[in-house]
Image (cartoon, rainbow, N blue to C red; front, top):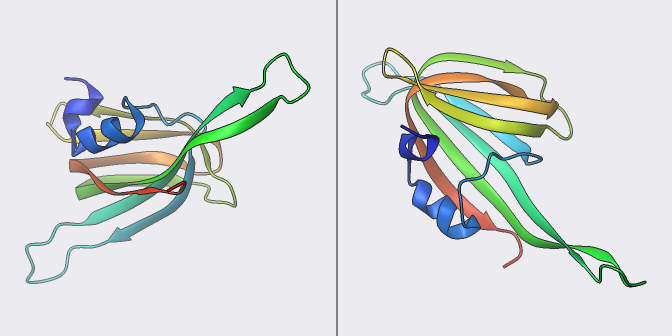
Length: 138
């Protein structure tokens, strides 16, 4: 089972970008966690907001060469029923190498967030879903 099959609502990301990216060079904008409340059926939930951008070189071979931002999206991921959470370094930029998902032997989902600079870590949870997607160029 590939990463796309592990994310509810992944078709919204694929529709916005054209594919499911590895999130290389994307930046973590925010991360929050809400715990299970007593006498409630709500699970522990974490939300990750990632700023994804695509650039294109325009005017290659000319004096008018420039890099133009083609896509700028804030993508929210929601991790429910968290079994394990380990995070490192949150700073002013938080650039990712990649986000990788795989099914663990106990059928939970293991999410590895590999950093280039700043934020990184792992989440082991029961469910991963796409939350809000905001187009910053619209």
